[in-house]
Amino acid sequence: MDHHDAVRLSLVEKYLLDELPPEFRDEFEEHYFDCQECAADLRATAAFVDAAKKELKAFPAAKPRPSPAKKPRLAWLWAPAFVLPALAACLLVIAYQNFVVFPHFRSALAELRTPEILPSVSLVGGNSRGGQTPSITVHGAQPFLVLVDIPPQDRFSSYTCLLYSPSGSLVWRVQVSAQLAKDTVSIRVPPVNRMAGSYTLMVQGNTDRTPAETGVDLGHYRFTLNTQN
Image (cartoon, rainbow, N blue to C red; front, side):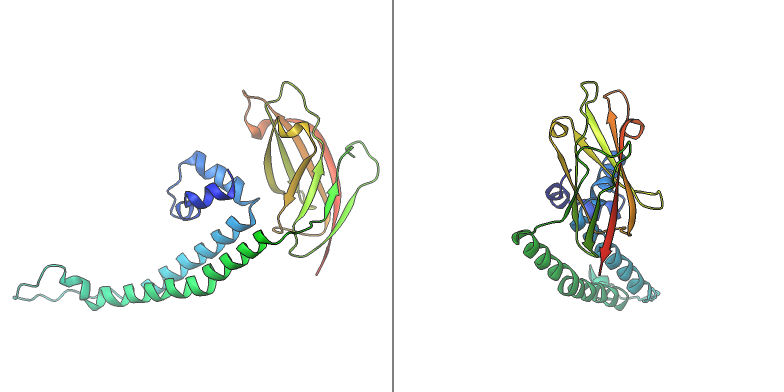
């Protein structure tokens, strides 16, 4: 799954509305951990939904008044109990678009059009058996690249790279096809869940008969991340 598919299929909205099948939900969760744009869209849309719910709860439901006269059809659309919450929701949508969606799209579009040189840390050659640990220094909100050679084996149909933080928790995982593993793999690390310290990149091999969560360990590569404000 890539960012274009996520936008085209409106996966952010469907994810928040719990309309995704389990397999698509798992795949999207793996995607947005590695996609800065989808992660930002998810946070902004979730904040908007929460604000809309709070705004609608602020208007108590009006009790209908019995009337002997027959009201025209769809007259309820003009009732204050419906008009006021609907108007408030429309104002929220307009404000959300002007202050969140449009600036985010303009910023994202500018980033896509602007060439960027990213810092990188090379794990090529490996350090799982000792040796000097490479290090990299990045600014707080700057992504960077991790370069690694995966030892390919014919019995594996794909590979999984897992990054662990200095505290030992899993930051993200990314799937690598057997075709891409033939060359040096370049992984873009987004600026989320970031802290300075020693990180470990684990590489696992996957077969068609075993799920990616139970892959065969092929190597552990360590590097040190330094951050600057």
